[in-house]
Length: 349
Image 1 (cartoon, one colour):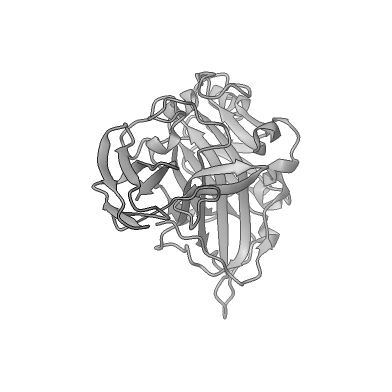
Image 2 (tube, helix red, strand yellow):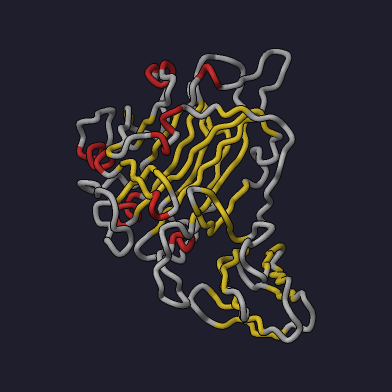
C-alpha cells in the first residue's frame, strides 16, 4: 500500500539548479561527461560544479563524448515545454524508433543507445550533509517524478524502460540505496479496456527514498537512472522533477520500502491524484489495496463492482450490500475497478 507521510521536520532543498527543469531553457539538455563501466565515476569536474553535473555511464561510451553511443544519447535528451498539457517543462529522452503514436513531441535520438545505460545526477558537495566522528549523517531524501512508457508492454516484471534507480557514493563507488520495482505494464500508453490513448498528464509516477552519506570527504553523491536500451529505443521518458532534501526522518531508508506512487495525474504542473493515495479527488468511490485485499468504500448498497485484469478479463463481479466492499486479489499487478460512477486502476504490489 502506498503511504504518504508528512513530517514536521524542517527540510532544506539541496537540489542543484540544473535539475530544476522548470527553469531550464528549451532545447538540448547537455550531458557534461561520460565514462565506461557502471560508475558513476569519481570525477573532479562533478566535485567542482555548484549547479549540478550530469554524467552518462555504460561500456560503449569509453570515456569519450565523440562516440556514436554518446552522441545518440545526447541527441535525444532535451527540455520540452508541456505547459499546455498541464505538465510544465520536463527533461525528455525520446528513442530513435519512438513512434509518434507513443509520443509525438520532441526530437528523437540519432541512433540506438547501449543496452544498459545510466544517467547520473550529482549533488553539490558543499550542500551534501555528511556525518562526523561523533555524529551520524542526517538522512537525505531523493525524489523523482516521471512518466516512462513503452510501445509494447512486456509481462516480464524486470523489463521496464527504467531498470533501476540508485543512490551512489562517489569515491569509493558504493550503493547507498536502490529501487527497482518498476514494471513494464506501468509504462502503458493506452487504456486496455477502452483502447483510448492516455493523455500526457496521466500515468505519471513518483519514487522517493532516503539514505545517508558517510564521513566528510568532499565528494558528492550521484542519483543514477538505469535504462534498458532496447526498450528505450522505441519509448520515451519525461522527468518532471528530481529533488534532493535534507534532513528527513529516514522513513524510506535502505532496507525499508520506498514511497512509490503510481498512475498519478498532473494539473498545472502539480500532482492531483493517483492510485493508492488516501483520497481520489473528484471521485466518489475510493479504492485501497493492502495485503492482497481490495477495499472499495463510499459505495451505495446495490452498487455493482467489477474487477478486471490489466488485459481486460473479468475477474470478479459483486453487488455491494453496504458502503464498503472488500474483495481478494489473486496475484500481483494492475487491476481495473469499475463502478457506476468510477473506473480506475489499482496496483497490488
